Image (cartoon, rainbow, N blue to C red):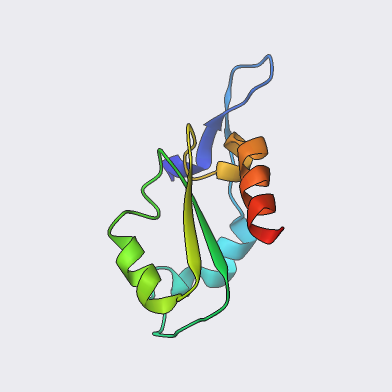
Length: 99
């Protein structure tokens, strides 16, 4: 739950919620279910935040087993919400990958 709380950047200096209740409710029974084994040769970009543990160094072995053509990029000064916390760095990372 705490990962869904953030400090608003306006003059209120208050905390607020950031989560997708509709999707959480619909997919509740699938939380924690292991992803089936698969292999992909498609070029794939994984982006993680420097301060997040959602994609750990240990996860890279599993990623490399499943994705033969992948890149793992780490965005500095960012947690799990990379796109919201470092939007310019996120944008540049994605653009470098797709161009």
